[in-house]
Amino acid sequence: MEAGDELDGFLEIAVDAAKQAGQIIAGSFHSHKNRRIKLARSLFLSSCKSISRITRQALSTLQLPFFIGEETSALNGTAELTDEPTWIVDPLDGTTNFVHGFPFVCVSIGLTIGKVPSVGVVYNPILNELFTAVKGRGAFLNGSKITASSQDEIYKALLATEVGTKRDKATVDETTDRINNLLYKIRSLRMTGSCALNLCGVACGRLDIFYELGFGGPWDITAGVVILQEAGGRVFDPSGGPLELMSQRIAATNSHLQDAFLEALHKD
Image 1: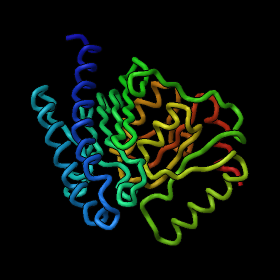
Image 2 (image 1 turned 45 degrees about the vertical axis):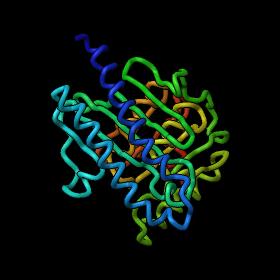
Image 3 (image 1 turned 90 degrees about the vertical axis):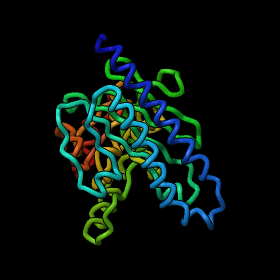
C-alpha cells in the first residue's frame, strides 16, 4: 500500500469514529439545562469509552498499538509521544460549553507519524461541521477546501484565546494582563471554549490568530494542527520557537501575521 493510500485509510477510520462519537454528544446536547450538568460527566465518560473503543478497534486492525487519549491520561498520566503512529484523541472538547448549551463542542482525532501530526479530524455534531485534513493533501470543511485568511494587518485581526485550566490568582492575573495588552492592538477578541475549534476557525478564515497557554494536553490540538497547516496557516510556540505537541502551549496565525502577533504579544 502506498503511503498516501495508507493515510487516506487512517482518515476514513478517524471520520467514522468522530461521527459515531458525535452521535452520542448530539443525542444528549439538547437535554433540559437543569439536567445537563448531571448529564455532563456521564456523557463525557460515555463518549470517551465509545471513541476509545472505536479507535482501538481500528488500531488493532491496522496493527498500530499506540494511543493517547484524555481519559487514559487522566487515569494514568500523559503517555510519552513516540515515533510510532499514534492516535491522539479528545472525545469531547468543550465540556463546559456542553454543560451550558453553547454549541461549540467537538470530537478531535489526530494521528501523528514520527511525532508529526499527519491526519486530523474535528467534528462539531451540533453545527454539523466536519473539518478534515491529511498532510500534503489540503484541508476541508464538509468536503469543501478551506484556506486561512489573507489578513495582513494585525489591527484588523480577530483573535481567539482562552483563560486556560488554572484559576490561581497569579495565573489569572498574568493571563488577563496579556489579554488587556493585546486588546489595544487587534480588532477584537473571542473566547469560544474549544481549542480544537479555535484552530479550525483560523484554518477556515473565521479567525486570524489563536493562542493558548495551559490547555489540557496534546489531544486538544493535534487534529487542529494538521487542519490549520494544510489550510496554509502556521502553528508555533508563543515564545516564537517551534511547536511542541506535549507542551500545553500553542499559537496559530494565517500565513501573514506570525511576526506581528509575536511582537504584539511580547511588547508592552
